[in-house]
Length: 316
Image 1 (cartoon, one colour):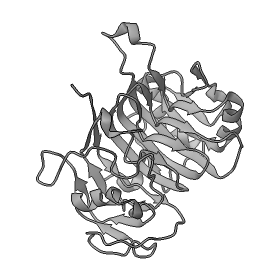
Image 2 (cartoon, one colour):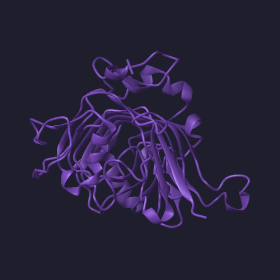
Image 3 (cartoon, one colour):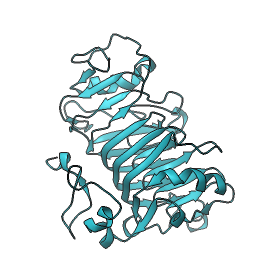
């Protein structure tokens, strides 16, 4: 009997990925637009959203979401999909997706082993563009292999990621609160940055009781489960990661980043910009204000009651 991966992603607001790319024109059933930077394709239905990932020629295009989309398989317009909606390992997304402060909710991904699910996360299997910002992922992600609360796999050689957070649950053999795995070359570079992000979701492995004999096989991290590099390279590159956090109580992980150089071991995150905090500390705005988070225009939070949230998404 075939094993299946079930991924239920709930209330996924705006993704904004910006990349300078050569535009390839294609005829697609969108609500409007040409895919150019100043005239993005307009998405209003489930079918139009799914069309983004079906044609590799669209992965460097520009898109805008015009309204909320409910992808509940039991709803009138919902359906089960067999892989990530936008971007796969062999065909990563390089374009722009402006969620326009709307919500994509109740996305369900069902993938069998022989369908090549790859890395599973929010919507993108792998990220290689230069800018991703202002996103909240409240989801449940279950996978046999690699999964992250926000993204399955990150290429940290290029791109900028900021003001993002992951909530919900992640369960996989390699499971990270924010990213399942990440990699970069051995050469330090300023071509990427990861700032002002946090993970506050439950992180667990697939080999847990009653399978106690296999309990040590899962690789788990409160922020990144598996960083594919050496210790020296990690410390050089992670200097460009700043003001990021994970909730050690909610994730149930005291280790934020693990290095995959066998055997897997925990990186001392005190030398990086990824900080371990308790739930009480995560619900205190001062934790983030002291690290330079913008509570005037970007973030809002009720002290002692909730985690930081994007001001523009408070009505969702």
